[in-house]
Amino acid sequence: MIGQVDFCGEKISRLIVGGNTVSGTSHWSPELDREMEDYFTSDNVKKMLFRCEKYGITTLQMRADKHIMRLLREYRQEGGTMNWIAQTAPEMKSFDGNVAQINSYKPALIYHHGCVTDDLYQEGELDELQRRLAVIRRTGHPVGLCTHMPEVVEYSEEHHWDVDFYMCCVYNISKPERKKQSLLEGNENPLFVESDIPLMYRIIREVSKPCLAFKILGATRRCASQENVRNAFEEAYASIKPGDAVIVGMYPKYLDQVALDAQYASEAIQKAGKGEPR
Image 1 (tube, helix red, strand yellow):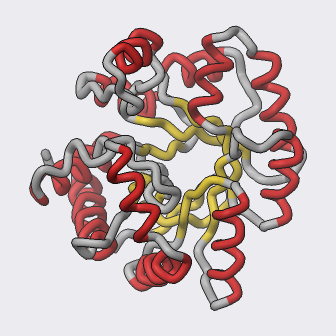
Image 2 (cartoon, rainbow, N blue to C red):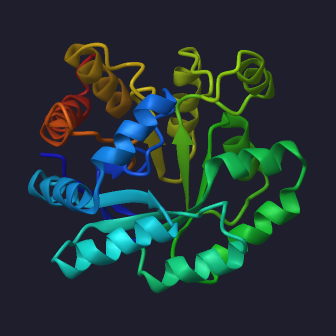
């Protein structure tokens, strides 16, 4: 079984369905982005979420834009019960207003958008970043800081920022030289480097606060076979703390990814609990 954990006072499943696919963000190609947008009608999104419930996935992570909040409203009106981990939406004109909108939709947890975190950190806008965390704190919900950079977590811990949990990408797609290289190559998608993975997993294990690990499948780059997918799940759960969880985007157009991911997560959690080698 996937099971649930107490995460900052909220019960969440150790496998969480992510929202990038629903929003048409593949981090792979414009063609796949459009295909995801076409597939994820309101009905198909809700169908996937209800199927997640069937397999013990009780938590969803999605961005707080008007599209997603409308879908969330429909899903709940039809009996959906999954907890929502809300990501702030940087395109909203007012950060404070976006957080107020999120709060009105009764999230379980709220976190600050990862790429914006990394940009503010690299630009030295640390006061603004802490101000935003304080805005989330005033909602009364647990406060999360998302990042793709291990050093951001280290800095936050060293300076005792008011954060309850971290959301950690296992790929550091925010390195300036990688962004520059992508632009020079005319590639809108970030560079994924495998050597990043153990570095972020080490940070997740070392920090005492609970963490959510994401992009464990490299935005399809580690999905060449189902064995690759299974191995990535095993690596993830063996590398995080027992109270941590994993977020995975799902795209069930061609495969029943909900059932497969639930199976791989359940097996990996059981293996990690026994301390079995990968």
